[in-house]
Length: 252
View 1 (cartoon, one colour):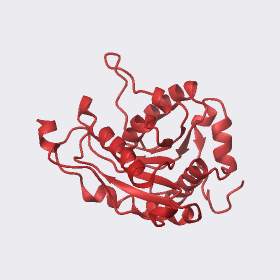
View 2 (tube, one colour; view 1 turned 60 degrees about the horizontal axis):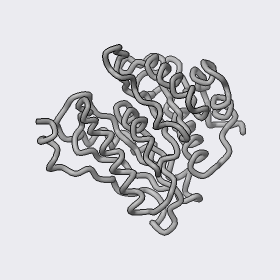
View 3 (cartoon, helix red, strand yellow; view 1 turned 45 degrees about the horizontal axis):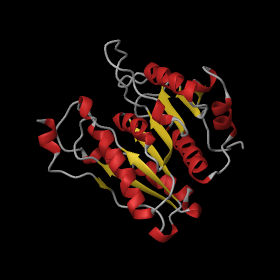
View 4 (tube, helix red, strand yellow; view 1 turned 180 degrees about the vertical axis):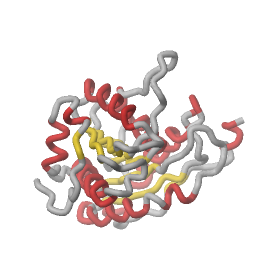
């Protein structure tokens, strides 16, 4: 029934923010949050919440030709093994290739969208994943663990508030630890005292997102904190604190 409820809908990319298609050098696909089980249409507020980050990324990457698109899912539910948000994320990466050709893609997901970004990382166009407060299922010995093999060869950054009451930060730490064993280009930042929406340190999170996205898509040098987090062994590089004021006087 869940499949029947969404089969007559189509995923789509939101309006492009960035240069004209002929000047595109890379694409950031923004994946909004969703729900664990639902056949309802996506909430328009989910995509709207990502607009400030999209504008920040577009401004910072203008010289390199960065284009951002919000992904509008067919429905808002993950829906178990159907993993509908993952299918829509993969479709979006295919659509980027169709529109812009062979350009690098960064998947930027929030909540359930962050989980979809991590799952869809194996797409050949994707070279990096930014997962903000990812929703992850509780560990269950009777269920297969979250996959990490698809993250090989990609840069991966997870950002999570330590006071998140909606998505457990300990689960993202465990996932990052498993991913780091197979891929050294994985790191995770903790935003101390912040909750799921990361509102208290919105500016610092946005600055970190810009640093990571432009570094992975266009080989801009990473800031010192991000470089250190990627190079540090677990658990140091997976519990890197995001300093207050990050981005104001960004050390390189």
